[in-house]
Length: 509
Image (tube, rainbow, N blue to C red; front, side, top):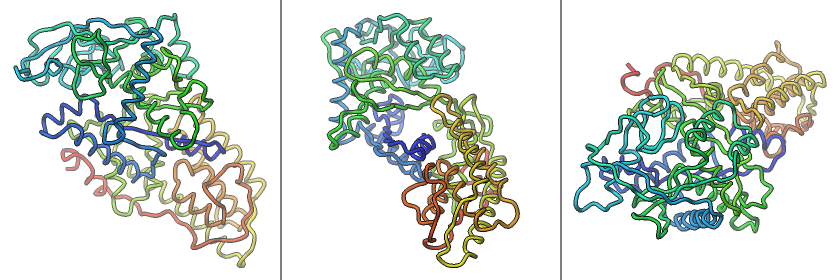
């Protein structure tokens, strides 16, 4: 989404961004129990690490919070209660009993809520595709299921002893096909639309909104027979968005972008494992009340694999983004471009270290050489000479820009194709360029590559005396001065040993 954000800013739009981490996600409890650490401290430590890793890739947000931590918690609780109260007032809640497993890990001193084997403690086989699954979701096909719908249920901390009824709140959308129409308006792509339609065909326009628990945001009702907290994959997930909206509007006097009367265009993005949470949980919560609005676009991606197997933090089968970004001498710009090309938008893609290194080095060599040839030509001009664009090259640039805009369109997003115009632009630089060709090429490079390679493109832009970040409407501006030294792509070529140090041990041999 950082690439999309920069693309929209480049086109002149006012863009704001927000992100949160979920300190109440059930798997936090599992890891905290195994490591004997406070869940809030564990989650916040992970939050800090995520912020640092993304920042090392030049990915930042206007707001990036851990809503479950410290002073943020009150705001998070307030927006969550406002959502649930609005759903209740609109008649979109149903209270009903669901059968949940109880395992032998419980003890006499455990609260009733802790006896349930749900979330990260629950393993099963998906009832749709029969893949190994757990919690309430299947990562293979994206389906959401209740524990008593799963096949081969097991406890990951003991043995299931019984099933007992627990009353929870469920979202219920009464208007026929309301979800389907909203998905159409949001331009949901076919593969993910099919997941949503399959769910509704099996279960209707409904989804769980609360679960029994102690670690989370409580919502009270006399209907419940245990303490209930908001479900991370429906009501709480939408509350994260509402939190971002509230945080963004604070101090500005403006209403939240999620307010019903806001004209902000709302864009969300997530992975295939959150298909039902976003399409049914979040969209359903938005449709089920009158206070808050839904996303205008939701983009999904499949999983990125490492050497043919899914990234897994629990198995240690992972390369951390920050660890790659901190390889001494690596070019963050080239790294970003290479990662964009394997964005898993249409199917799973694979990060194969040998191929990744070859691609990185090719991009690094070609772009470094092109930039050097052009800056050398500009530096050879008399001092204070003006730089002007070549009209014929600008026609080609317009075509490539439109091609890239199509790749980054909010109607059919393909981040994996955004680098193609940048690579093709290299073809318009043959031999030793004259000063006009060099200036046009560098300006075109700044425009085309900024969403992917912000460091070098901003350096070029500022070298020519232009303010801010590259803007498409300013691509033909002349330059009357050069400020500072000639820009170049920072970093060096990669070697196998650089990536080996970031790989899990069994792959680094």
